[in-house]
Amino acid sequence: MKRKSLLVLPIIAALLLGGCGKTSSGVSTAAKPKIGVAIYKYDDNFMSFVRRSIETAGKDKASLIVNDSQNDESKQLDQIDTMISKGVKCLAINLVDPKAAPTVITKAKAANLPVIFFNKEPDASVLQGYDKAYYVGTASKEAGILQGQMIVDQWNKNKDKWDKNKDGKIQYVLLKGEPGHPDAEARTKYVIDTIKAAGINVEELAIDTAMWDTAKATDKMDAWLAKQGDKIEMVIANNDAMALGAVASLEKTGYFKNDKYMPVVGVDAIPDALTKITAGEMLGTVLNDAKNQGQATFDLSFNLASGKSVVEGTNWKLDTDKSVRVPYVAITKDNISVAQNAYK
Image: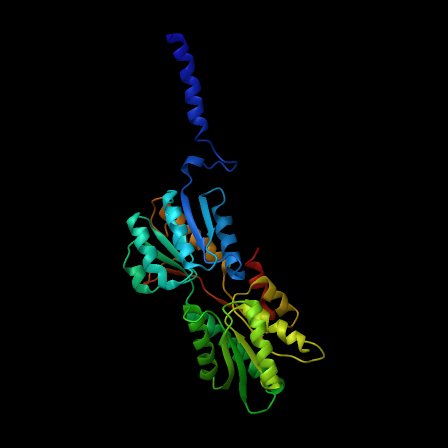
């Protein structure tokens, strides 16, 4: 009996060692921290690139549980509960509604888990109220400022052609993102403030939300063209998805052919928008760096899930609001390669 026991022991040891094997990259599967990720909705153009960046950064380094919250706050909160029950070591949450951040914090605190909010910024007091909460995103007003500066520069170069009624004003329509969303509110305010600060008069012909959505933006632009027609001299959109919707509407009414042109500006620098800029059907956009936002989100989450300090071993810097701010870049046809390189 003793002889058989001695033979069995090496087999058990081999099985136990086999359970702590390595991936093809040499990373121990047992050592990979589990990170729970929730995206407010997968079919948001910009967020699809942020998600891809997170998944690429986490490949072979972490075990990612990624969820599509389908723009449903209650669904997202249920997903967070499920991820916690599955033993995640950190939560990375792209909030459906930034106002729900305190509820997420309550869940994270109860499980003693760190949480990285990204892209949709919670109130600063929420982050300050929990020592394990951080944010990855942008300085919201920067996109509006850069968009406004782009309009100022291009208007001064082209006002003889673009000022249809020769009154010295920009008659514009504005497609706004989700009402109350920090990015939508900041972009809307600062783009117009920047134009005015440069000494250019403006007249708002129409403003309405299209909820970041291309189809909704096309419908809005269709209605505005039917009512305002050639009075419109500029289309400003809080993001590229809505800018593309406006372009689709303008194309139906003969724009971008036979010298009939309308300047359209967006934010995000998604690939479809870059194609339109190259083709001369969008004036420009502002690079919202999805690749680096995703990379920073993963890096901070990985550090915290591994028991390290939040920015240890990275190039990211926290500001006084416990946030990593990824800078925007204004993009026109002249420097479009900067945005194209961000997707490589």
